[in-house]
Image: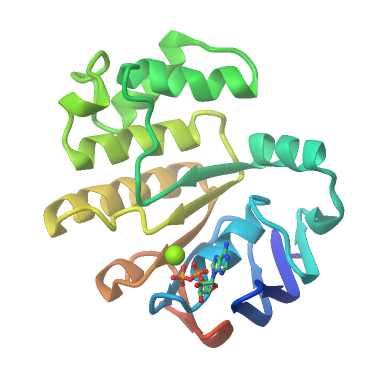
Length: 220
Ligand code: ADP
Ligand code: MG
């Protein structure tokens, strides 16, 4: 059985049809990239899988639980227990240090643990930047904090929306190599959205989206 099952999901906004009937499954431990041009519905699909948004119709089953039928409180619990998010913008708290930003995510989940947060930052290569604030770090380093923050509570699913969208090629490679090694160590499931063919080649499978539809599904 698949970890993520999306069944005929439609998402309509007043002015747009973002998803026009999307069905897809993701196996536990798979790294799936969703690829498509701007406006094709990638972020909408990712947000619905992560319980940040709800479908107009259709079902989304995560671990056999239909998250479309959860209350706001239940969805918040689902997100905090099961999902880690990385976005194009880092969304770090500017006046907190790297380690404090990671501890904040621990705090919202359960309990802050400085030693564990430091360990997570060391794993993403930021052992010498623990007490720097975001403005004192490069874009690539900030995105590495986001990876540490997203994975600190050991989520089953990592959702990443254009995580390298603000980075140059060299930093993009560093981030993707890092994700690759963390993924092979920890076997969490990755769903990553990108419009960049270079990025989509990482991982195990590419779903192609066009105008609210899935139009391709390729194993790498
Ligand atoms: P992508 O991530 O592939 O660029 P999105 O999922 O963000 O695409 O958007 C898909 C379509 O839905 C676009 O036409 C976009 O304008 C529209 N859309 C996305 N979010 C909203 C919203 N909150 N309100 C209205 N339209 C939206
Ligand atoms: Mg998007």
